[in-house]
Image 1: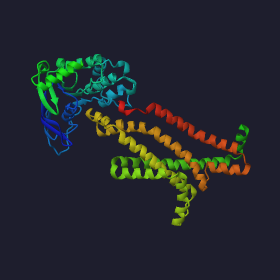
Image 2 (image 1 turned 90 degrees about the horizontal axis):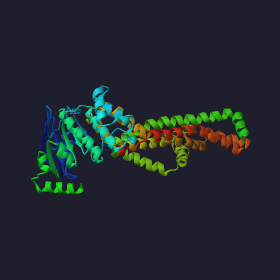
Image 3 (image 1 turned 120 degrees about the vertical axis):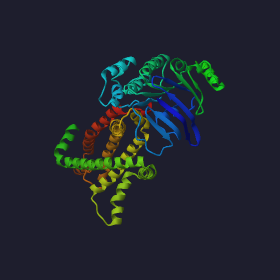
Image 4 (image 1 turned 180 degrees about the vertical axis):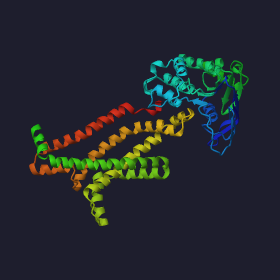
Length: 238
Length: 223
């Protein structure tokens, strides 16, 4: 189970996260939605322990991390928990193949590798350098790099933001299959249509706090005026 | 003219080779000192921005405001007069060029480290890579690829600046060429010979710089 309880974080006196709680069980997909600057990336960075919350607690599997904590964390949760960023950060000096296999420390599960490469249609550009492939191909590579580590908890920050509708569909349609294998996924996204289709839970954030959360039904029957307005605005754009 | 150039090279080969060896020895010392101290200074300047970083900036501003020839003459004549010491032209030139090279390399290294996107490290961390593997397999190779062409280019500039050492009587290649010209007065042939020597050394280095830049330099913001 991945669980966050009462997370708070301030930057320069401003509340970035306010009393945020969420839990995602293995096999579930939780979508974090909200306008730009709502705190989606901050939440993912806090859950992944890249940024320490000022207070609250995070449980990753059997390990609990309580904040504030002066102690240097002894057990990093990586790669059991891993995160794919919006900016991807594919290492530029390595080919795509090297990028996705470097973290495996030479211990490549060939069958799993072939499976991931095939499902993300990566074969044709595996031996190219990142500057020789498109943003969409890099996005698939970043996701493949994370999946080859066989994480139990996978955090995805706007991984479809730079993709066209077909490529976004390719990636998001795989997420259900990945979750079905027992991976807990937290996905920050703007793609409400996909969020509604694939998620077990939806969390709507605004100004650093959870305004509304529940099943994907809240996207069709929002209870709060703020979420209704957000969905309305998103539909107009689409 | 080609015959004359060949003739000059043949007749004065000992003097020219001697001058070339002095130039190369000067370069070798300046390159080694500059690269070692520049890397160390650059890393310290990156880690300690307030003290070392600002000192590096101050030194860079100061050195870039003084023409190299003035610095060289100042180190050779007034400074040694003031201190009542006599240091050979070769060592004085090596010291002045090393100082300049150290600052150049330090600035290149510091800038590369300052501009290195920390997210590459975070990407390694969340993939479960150890700090040692992140340093050796991600940080170091990326930074090396970014700085190598710039450092090579700086070293070629330093090589060309060794000709200034002739003005304080260091017996390097340019000085030897001047001495030969004083004997036979064939400036076109002699300075053509000198240019050929420098082309023979600098051209491969410049081509290597260009090749490395083409092959390895990446826009890190696009990855």
